[in-house]
Amino acid sequence: MAKIISGIQQMGIGVPDVEQIWKWYRKFFGNDIKMFEEAAEAPLMINYTGNKVQSRTATLAINLQGGGGFEIWQYKSRGTEKAKFEIQLGDLGIFICKIKSKDVKATYDWYKKEGVEVLGNLEKNPAGNFHFYCKDPNGNIFEIIEAKDIFRETKSFCGGVAGAVLGVSDMDKALKLYSGILGYDKIVFDKTEVFSDFSGLPGGNQKVRRVLLTHTEKRKGPFSELLGITEIELVQTLDRTPKKIFENRFWGDWGYIHLCFDIKDMESLKKECEAAGFSFTVDSGSSFDMGEAAGRFSYIEDPDGTLIEFVETHKIPIAKKLNWYLDLRKRPAEKPLPRWLLKMLKMNRVKG
Image (cartoon, rainbow, N blue to C red):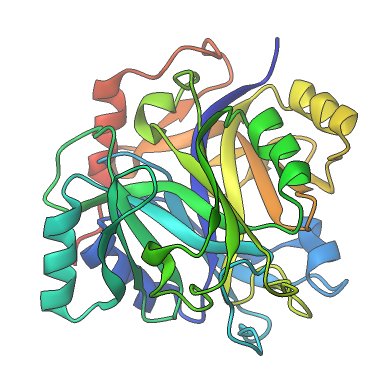
């Protein structure tokens, strides 16, 4: 069986205080479904944590409007370090997390009313779609984009993760991974200029090559209906030498630490990555227990060292209060889970 990518499972976000920022994410993004919460050591990530096993706590929170979740990650064995420079557009790594919204203008107006830090104005991107940028209280930048699909209506203005903006040093090398292995085979636009809709971002007034990618085929797999349509935006600065966003810092430190894809058939994916020159740098090898969930996970690096995670989900909680857990290992790999079943995840909602 060839590998299957169901979509973006989650964006990993390193934070200094999980509970504080998650409350903010619940209010402004609607990510209020807790899939798991676990405090443990992370021995498999030792190559990215200073050659020392570090302890951490991690919470995976999703939004039933659809899209990926947040893996909100906090060190317990050390402090969470910020970058020692202002991260700018085109710096190497994950710069922005894209969030879907069923009404971008209404979201913009509400954020302004509520005092969310909005960067620039509500504008159209080169594809003609309205979007805007904002910051969370930790300084992470998010882009609110038009939702192309909604899984379940909720009271939130926003859905989940719809993609990412990443800085790359060589566009053609990066496309080998993102358009190839990850399946973002449709170029929405590929333009080089100073973009007016970037003007509110740090470094947004420089000349860049900007490529927006999406996928031509609908994603398959158990969570494909929930994770939905996503996009990847690659930015290569042409006016300066970019810095690595996580230069002299650890995975898990302040900011976007990885972009994670939900997949099926890890062995097939491993062979494909190796053949393309993106060998696994981390591989749990078997089912890894996250307390309330379990699966096999692995990591690769893009050509600039940005971490891409893959998770083959084995177990998830449907309703923890009823001790209802779902084992996915014996289910058909391509078949989406029933919508009614996924909607039952609302029983794991955290209020407030």
